[in-house]
Length: 278
Figure 1 (cartoon, helix red, strand yellow):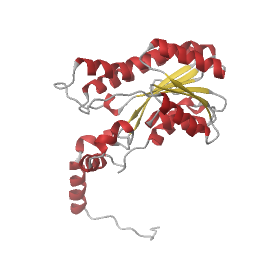
Figure 2 (cartoon, helix red, strand yellow; figure 1 turned 180 degrees about the vertical axis):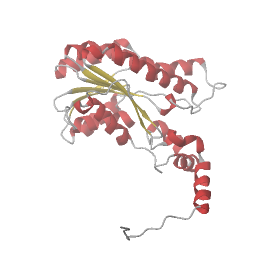
Figure 3 (tube, one colour; figure 1 turned 120 degrees about the vertical axis):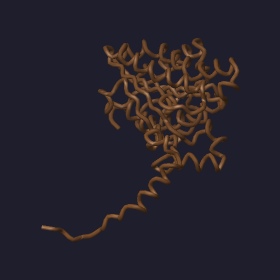
Figure 4 (tube, one colour; figure 1 turned 90 degrees about the vertical axis):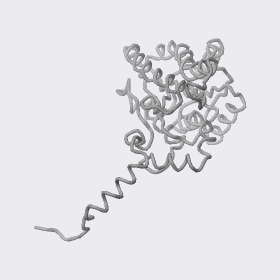
């Protein structure tokens, strides 16, 4: 990965899951990484892990939905590392409730965590990215921004993140700032631990993913690292889906497997040979 050595990155929501994996990957690529999380102990754990492999980190406890908390955190990061080049937003809340079941406060809390927090961190970071002559913003979105997943509040917030990210990619392009999103599919993270603990759900998910495995936080972190690097200098306003081709064929579900078996039974399999016709 080019262009990360010597850069200063902040990963918001880096106490666990995709955020933690991203902080570790950016540190491995040579960036100094500020780890921001509402759980200060989790932030400390992430920094300890990345420093154990030679990385340079700073743990900060902050509520990303609080503009005051975020402003203080960004000021501390700039004072510690001398500037800011990369912002990664990876905060999430996903109550598994239908429109009939979700309360107004649960809806508001979800949108605050998944959307408003991205606004607060981006607004605080932008002046520092501009002063550096450019920078990278990567917002963790979700495949739910593209397809429904029976998570109405989460889906609404992530759809907004996708549209808003494209908006600010245009607005700040003349400052040399790129803005992109990454849309993970089914990833083995703490937010999914309970539902993926069901063998039935796990089996169904695997059947819906053509690559036949669940995603790992490191899969998403690698994509984020690319977008944060100079290798992606001409990529902006884009969304990269990291889902093992799930939403390319998710509507088929188990029908896809049945179709494939039926099709193979009807068609003769190609003959494999080393013969060469001249």
